[in-house]
Length: 94
Image (cartoon, rainbow, N blue to C red):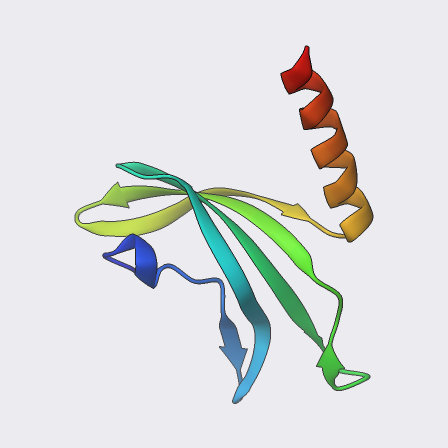
């Protein structure tokens, strides 16, 4: 568990292999409830290489001095990410 926002990561390792590799992250909101968007890649066991970029928006709640994940939404492709950007941009303009 992370005590500092900067220590929060979605890197995940199994048997010495990084299964989820965090590429980048941006903190969207800070405080007792923190929201972070991550850019990451999953390890493909069959090809033995990382797949395309994916994105995840995660909410964390600080409990007893440590951040605990409360919810997440995974954006599974660039196409889906582009659709979200287009829709949000349209809504914000209106």
